[in-house]
Image 1: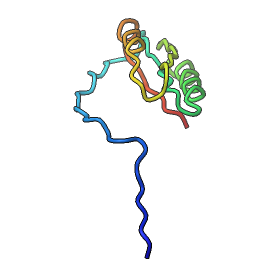
Image 2 (image 1 turned 90 degrees about the horizontal axis):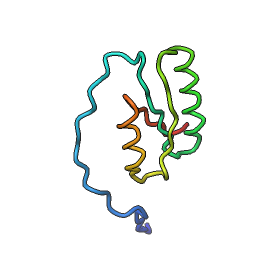
Image 3 (image 1 turned 135 degrees about the vertical axis):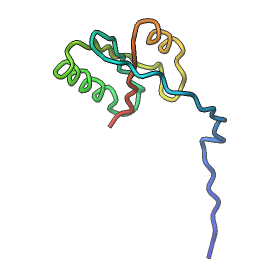
Length: 95
């Protein structure tokens, strides 16, 4: 039996420190919810479908689609926009 060695090209994962979830909003009525397109395959389509769902089922919620600059990279400017202008965010990772 021949053995082969397989190396993970992603390297070593960073140390992850857990954080508490954001507090839950009592209601979404009148709130601004950012739909964050994280640049995965078809996530733009998914975010648009989610926006249409909100418009049909929760019309008092204002949704805004926003994109990260690139996938897998923290986008401090995007996070600052969401924190400054929004009440919540939903991250979309595609289909």
